[in-house]
Length: 571
Image (cartoon, rainbow, N blue to C red; front, top):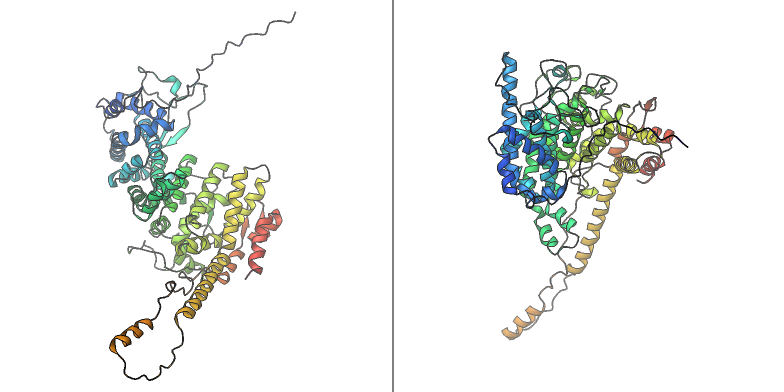
């Protein structure tokens, strides 16, 4: 007989039960939950916040709860910001500050749970998203972004700390247990993942910015898929709804901090490229960097968001070695991009050109450096790709209606060499990669390559359409005048009747609006083509002085080769 198998007596962690939906208003009364979230006993309140963040993992609970819990959760976030400021001031003065209240949930963990719940609520209903759009709420969230290092020097300064938090495992929750000291473990014995406090605040700001699109009347109408209310909702698209106003407020207030954090891992002083290169010894924590990329993408997707990012970048300066003489202070006057498409030539006088293009270069540097760095992980690469796409391509508008600043950003991105790492990345991923990511890289690359040709073609077609319509209008309404014979006096009534019969007939259609050409003055094919010859090192493939076409030919990326050759032969 075969021996009986030995029994494995290793303790098995209890399974985490799946979060059940439909609890709000049934097993849990919304009024009681909201009251508990405002409880004066901090230990009780923090435990309820922790449970709520778990309940919000099921979207039906978030939808049923709606905006009711936003106010107490926001109050907790504001309280954390005030206390964090006080702790930072006490640390600077060398004092201990106010003692912490013992609780099962640490102050920082409570903040994380609050932000996670707010993200879930803002994604669930437009009312909850709009409720987060108050000026002081966004101010408090933006204040969290500056509670940590924002420059290379600060990241190396031990006194400036990145606030981190490790959440405990739901399977170990106990009403009698206080917050564990040190890093908590999962039921399987692994350390719980760390979260940055600035990252979770950025996630709330990002979802508010996304709400301007997600909860727009047009998007809601599209999602309704034929609902009777859809057409009426779509008509309100031109108005600034509460969610749209909140999104614009985030773009105005969060852009500069977002750009500064992303730029930390860029060696702007480097002469590898005119704009610098990536930092090998990365300083920004991975989770924080990912949240900032998501925030940048969200801001860029807001109406006018690209302008706000450029305005934030304009408040910074190029590194000392790349400044024009006398430009040692950030401009105090408000900056705004030109109304027309701009092209910058970095070959003749790179310092002066860099100074002129600096807002565009600084906006892009933190994102593009991640694409150049061969050590960037797949998740961060996808975040960087989405951010670049949002900056260079407003998919909500047709090709001929892109804003001048957006096309200028795209042109600067190509000058900085973005196409080479995009092409080499697609090659390195091969056939086994995520097809969605591969398609995203290819579509963005082809769009950028064809941008000048496509816009010139669009407006060439528009002008031709106008000229044809104008010729037709003239043919219908400008008949030659014939000389009228001299007539003898006739009865006044008969004369009036004849005059009425000779009155000109109104045009069958109004005269079309005059089209004089591209209002942005580009990009044209002639403006765009030289940008495609930008030379950078293909670090991922070890190719010096590469161009997009060369990288595509080496990698056998036929779609990119076809786009470049097609652009050359089509105009």
